[in-house]
Image (cartoon, rainbow, N blue to C red; front, side, top):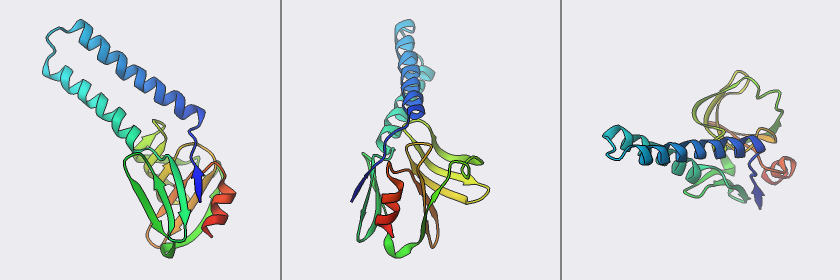
Length: 158
């Protein structure tokens, strides 16, 4: 069963602004610097890697079958076997307020990577919005998803 992972309005705005900023910097650098130095080349390359990497890694959807749940992105697919899942439950936005990003994206093409919360401790996020949180707890780790239909997602996984 396939579940959509739509980007929320803030994610779309942040992504567009970052792309416009990096594109503007690229155009400004190429326009006003005829003989670009090494720092300019590194800056442009770094900006392009950030855009491409974030776009290729953001969660585009979730799939649940008899084997477990899989997170799809343009570049990879990450699977969590059903046999390792201990619990699946919905999390309120209020419970996620004290969450900090340790390593990952905090709004540029989604919210994915390693996050920490005082209540849930360390979590790996595969999120595209700031609502509809679903926690999938395994024997070793905690994963957070944001499907468009969280109740159907939970029912399909249980």
